[in-house]
Length: 104
Picture 1 (cartoon, helix red, strand yellow):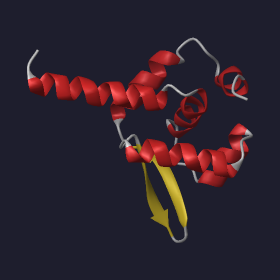
Picture 2: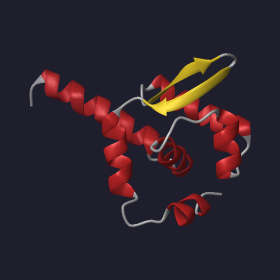
Picture 3: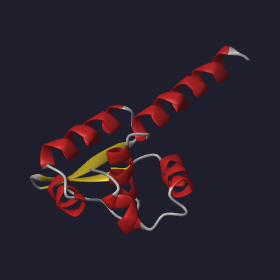
Picture 4: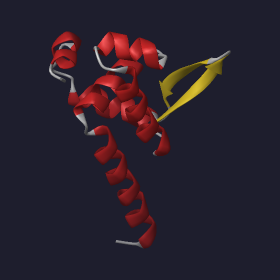
């Protein structure tokens, strides 16, 4: 395998490690449908706002999510369309309610 392919596979592997966390999967599942603010995600998922913020920060560092400012508010969205396809594949047989409730 050549060096460039190895670099790509390493980057994809790092992305999979980041999104593999159950809470991050739930966050990404929400962000598939529309951008959310941290407090909206926290309320929707029943998680502390600080927890959601930490997970978003980790995903942002790996270019999985990003945000747009709306005044003082930040609306987070999935930056990488490949992530949407992965999330769809992972939860294709799960109902969103069951998926969200399984994290705790």
